[in-house]
Length: 111
Ligand SMILES: [Zn+2]
Picture 1 (spheres, rainbow, N blue to C red):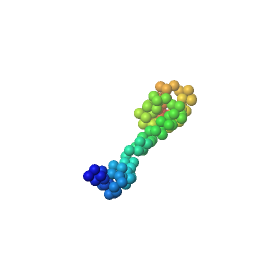
Picture 2 (picture 1 turned 60 degrees about the vertical axis):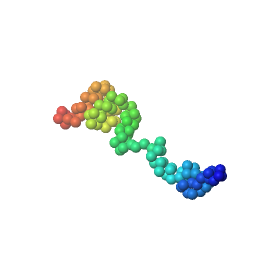
Picture 3 (picture 1 turned 135 degrees about the horizontal axis):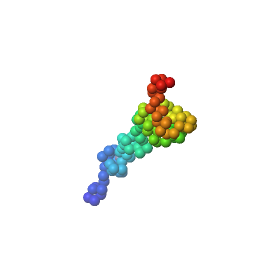
Picture 4 (picture 1 turned 120 degrees about the vertical axis):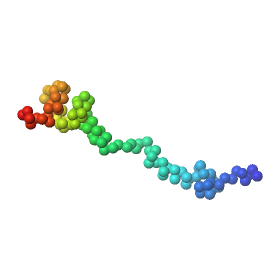
């Protein structure tokens, strides 16, 4: 009687050598289903986020500060980021660079 109660049959593959929790077939099915969702190294980055990351990389490579980058974005990127670097290298101070970005879209009216 004791023996018969100890025999368990795996409900997945019908083997008597293990039970359902330890069944190798069940483990294979489990990882197949879970892997795409639970992989901790998978991140969902949209193309817009990728573009922001690219712009931030440019900001760093041109050694621009965050305030100028924010102004540049809020002004809807009126000039390439490297042009900001150029104006700074020309000796313009930050307020003048922001003014430059504000004026640039109408430059044909002024010059
Ligand atoms: Zn099994």
